[in-house]
Length: 120
Image (cartoon, rainbow, N blue to C red; front, side, top):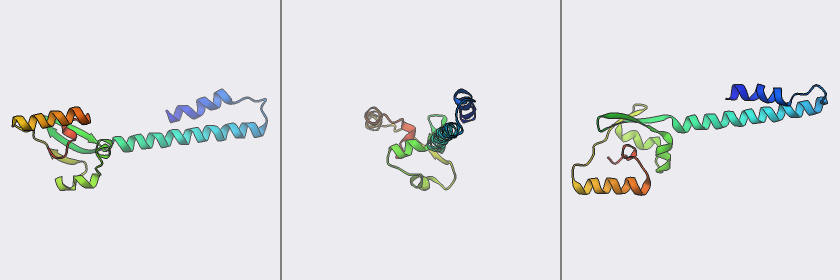
């Protein structure tokens, strides 16, 4: 997106009849817009980077960094599971009826998938 944004805006805004100072102002505005788009993209990629791979019910599922920060956890909290990056975790579903009820309650209340719960 950032590769298209600058040239497209320049093509739309550029007018040969404008004064030099107005053209420089336009280019500065386009550059600021591009830098903000770049910052947003870097932030999004940083939030979605996989910090853990969880084996849950016969599947490997990645856990993004944002899922940890929404729970008030950091990547340091994953150190108890190992020092690899991304951390490999085996999560086991409770076999008891009470444990399953507690799991479902937390899933409904916190809107949190089971593979994002570190205590499992």
